[in-house]
Length: 238
Length: 173
Image 1 (cartoon, chains in turn purple, brown):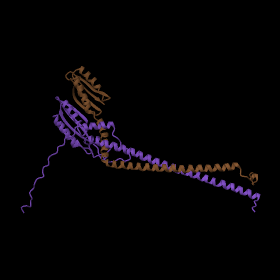
Image 2 (cartoon, one colour):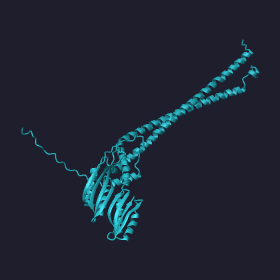
Image 3 (cartoon, rainbow over the protein chains, first blue to last red):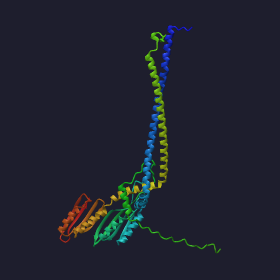
Image 4 (cartoon, rainbow over the protein chains, first blue to last red):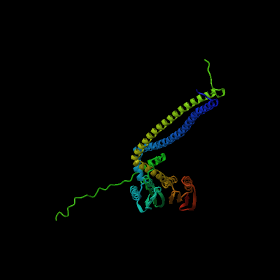
């Protein structure tokens, strides 16, 4: 026969209540903690991914822009302006070309040259610096001739700037001392990092390049080779 | 048949406790569902983002390889940009020929001015001239004052002789 004491029954019921509330509470707390962890880890991971994606996308937009600019420039700008720009402002000292151009023009305008000197200047290594070569010469002529010569000289490539000019009048003819600067600047192939945006050529730079393109290019003659000749074998008679 | 409750009144399971435990079960169920749904959504987001990252990386690599092929063009582009910037500075320094043109046009306007000596630099001009008549001298000076390239005009000397007329030396800065 089952006998239940009054006090035992009460204690069992209390234990039962405690057990029945402890397990769900523990479960509830566990789920809440797990939810918190999942949210924290998950959201931080998603945020990290978003940042990575945003970084990649910004790099892609730079690269796409760079590729578009370079592809366009390859088809138009570089084909047109690269050679004129490299002749107008060469990487190496253009003293001889400049002097040859000046001489040709002086001949063209029938201006006799009296004396001349070329101050080649030092070697320039720093690509931010523009090196200068100074040509000095004295010519005789009429004002119109001299002016036409100087205007034409500044339309020629390599770039020249009339630095100093002095003249005295001698019986309708001017005795003109002219000092001209021509320029050069080395260019080191320092490529920008691929991810860095390309510094684009501005409209004002484009107009300068157009001016350089309009300069008269120096005339280079290609002398025909003096040979090769058929030479006799010096040992054939032996 | 009548219900018999053998528990004593104060030890009987209360209705409020029963209701509480039932709602606790429901809350647990709901929160479990929320947990799994949230976890699922987060995992889905992570997978989708990872896919997007992989695609973006592939696109980036593609651009990089295309840009590598354009490295020669990039060099030429930077070269012409460098030349344009430097040439711009050089072209800005061109003033002497323009100033000589201005002086020549003044000479042609005034007519009987004889320039005996001229020294011309970028920001400097020195003229020694003889002018036979006062009217010509007046025109010459008023014309020369209008030269825009110089800020300061100084007449260093002015003399008159009946044979040559007026001799003057002017400096511009």
